Length: 545
Image (tube, rainbow, N blue to C red; front, side):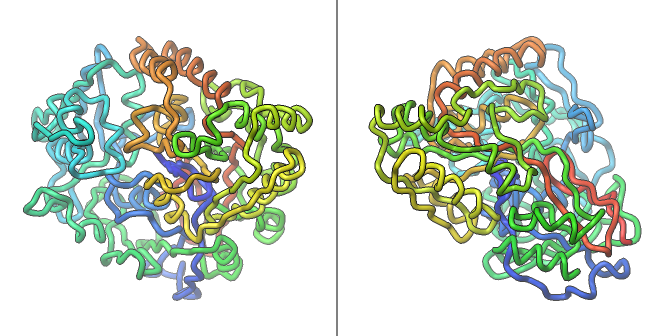
């Protein structure tokens, strides 16, 4: 998952899970010296990662952005949203159940050791083992033997690894799934599937805190010093000379500057104390084009912004008509045009238009109908008071207050927006099942598939270790996902995913509000800044101006 900071937990973001939620802190040190020579850093805004920098425990956009600079995935995605080999030489299967992954020879870790297939086996088994409590463990649920490492609460792990994982030799990884999965190759670009070196593990077999503070990757950048979470305002990196892929020209240093205010980070961008801002706050969008000129970018984005519903943790929202009424009371068009200055689109499906599977108007209750909304809400005996939780570090205040005003006016209820200082704070509350109000959530895709909008956010299995913060569970929905997973081709699988999407559009476990566009900007000190489908910067292409 990639729960979004502001769209990209992102999650997944989260992630979104995906992304308007995490900038700010006012870190401006070293501002006027950056983007000069090759030894001065290119600086990018980032919110504080929720956890230490461990791939198997990172399911939100901030940590994923940092780790994407340090690790190279097995696959990347081309302009057609198709998976193309990156760290992998080839990924093949005759039946979509047994997969052979050949690694490119000669790649090394940042400590000089060779990258081998066993590094993937070790990392994936570590993620899947419930004793390690890794937030990305759910993504390995399709591998044969996952249940041996993840038997469930109160049960004991009975195996050292999943029987479906095998390192045939140093460059060949064999993966046997419990059932065919048509999207498996596409899945492998996600953060959870990065490998881990031997140096990641301590004597007890656990990933060490030392590694989480200064991960050793096999990607473009290596960390210059440990990142002390909660203390450091920057994450400092430099190009790894041993990386065999394309490298940036004319510069070798990268610095992520951590912020708790999207407005502060935008001010730093305008003052040339920041070089790249990949998620401009709504308050800046109206003026960013004028202030930045050609350095302002508005491009398609695969993320979705929701109002989340704590179905399993608050019985007031159990009646689907209550959720439908809330949805119909939201004036998405005005919010998109006014609050976001036209840089968002009203959401009318749980699948984003950028991905195959979207259907215009699939969510009937996403249409604005205040009269019907009030009638339905009163009949369903919706709560007289509502709370809207949101993270204040990602520029969400304006649109959440606009939603609150809609609900007050159209439903006749008392609505209280509740800001959380950091994205991490609201995620922690949701992870602990403590927050029972409606909540702001965003999702940025982990990989370009309609399935990614469904399983990680709404699948029953995602309640424990995925991004199912509301606790939604439907056997019919889960069964359709399984049929899509096991379809003979991705195209056949999409038909079942759309049927599962139909259930979400009917039951509204979350309330889709808008589809994202990526609004970013950069300073006069850099050029050729490109942001990919995962809302991550293509660092090898960035140049100094």
